[in-house]
Image (tube, rainbow, N blue to C red):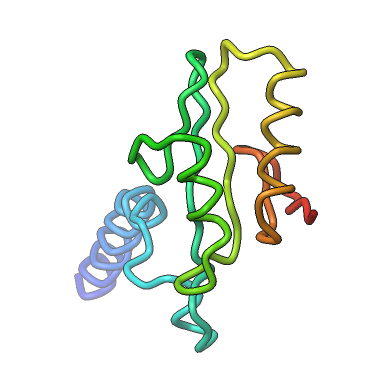
Length: 120
């Protein structure tokens, strides 16, 4: 009888662990990897170019002149800019916007979804 009881406990423990494994794997991490390494996370500014030609910096609409001044400021600069062009824009327009951003600031610029940071 003790053998059957101990075997039941082992089987119940293993099935409970295996049933909860997908929940443990899918849970987001509670701390950022940068906290583990002791470094700070890179700061990013999101720059959006709409189909209508409007610029947005972190959700705030602004003219090209104001955006240019914002990118040229020395205080509170981000580590990189992420360009989020409208999906309706042709590739030539996106390339022109990317080139314009590079001319306005020395901050590295990358396109959304592009893994490599493009430096000016």
